[in-house]
Amino acid sequence: MKLITDFFKGAVIGIANIIPGLSGGTMALIMGIYEQLTDAIGNLLTDKEKRKVYLLFLGTILIGAVAGILLFAGLFTWLLSTPIKQQHTYFFITGLITGSIPFIFRLNKDMKINGNRLLLMLLGLCIVIFFSLFADKENVVYFPEIRRTILGFINITDFHLGYNLWLIVCGIITAVSMVLPGVSGSALLVSLGEYSNILSIVDRMLVIPGAFFGIGVVFGIVLCAKVVSILLKKYTIQTYFFIIGLMLASIYQIWLELQESINLTPHVLIVSIILGYIGFLVAYYTSKINN
Image 1 (cartoon, rainbow, N blue to C red):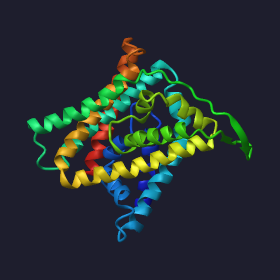
Image 2 (image 1 turned 135 degrees about the horizontal axis):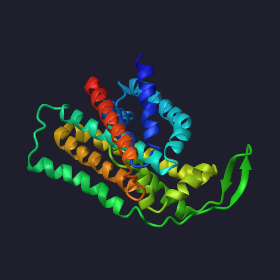
Image 3 (image 1 turned 135 degrees about the vertical axis):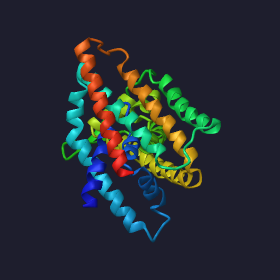
Image 4 (image 1 turned 180 degrees about the vertical axis):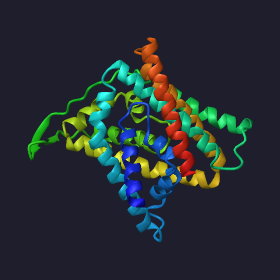
């Protein structure tokens, strides 16, 4: 039963990673598996006694995430295809995020707000906003020349060492969004000027640049998860307040997506608000059950 549950949780995490303004870390937190996930990733190579347990858990989550991306990418492309559907979807996501914040305050008995904790929360908020300020950076589309095609769809390109090393750096930075709640991977890629390029690499099945970006993502996930796992054990409450700041910032990122196309027509706005409230209730009661 747990394997099935973990599979569906993985699917939700996968879906979250393809939605602009949302992160897999946010959904892992809402579903109550965030600490377990970072602990498993961070200690997979060092904890031999629990390695089999970690592998089973991570394997199930990974399979679920891949299934979620493959099955629901088309649906969410449709949900974000028009301004009105996009508005309804983002209101629902905003409700999910705000509804999960009370869950964090229930994770520890000593979650009272003081000056230092408030500063940590503001720090998390400001870091994401800082990246968002550069999110309008023009993407320079890079099309490496295809030299060979295998099986009719896998493309082998020219090898450009400098750009491929840069893709590793981009992968490491993007991996942060898969671990930290509230940090949008798409927003980070836009700020780095590589969003269009990465989409092109995936769409055109470009093996060499895709492999270098993937290496960066894997390394970044392991490194970031290890750091977060240590922080959650040694500085539990402080880390939670920092995460709350990141999650609040993700709402800011969502509203950046909406600001140019928001529809204030009464019937459209009412539907959006209702969906936002439903999202809040879903996250609030789901996280309460998990707690």
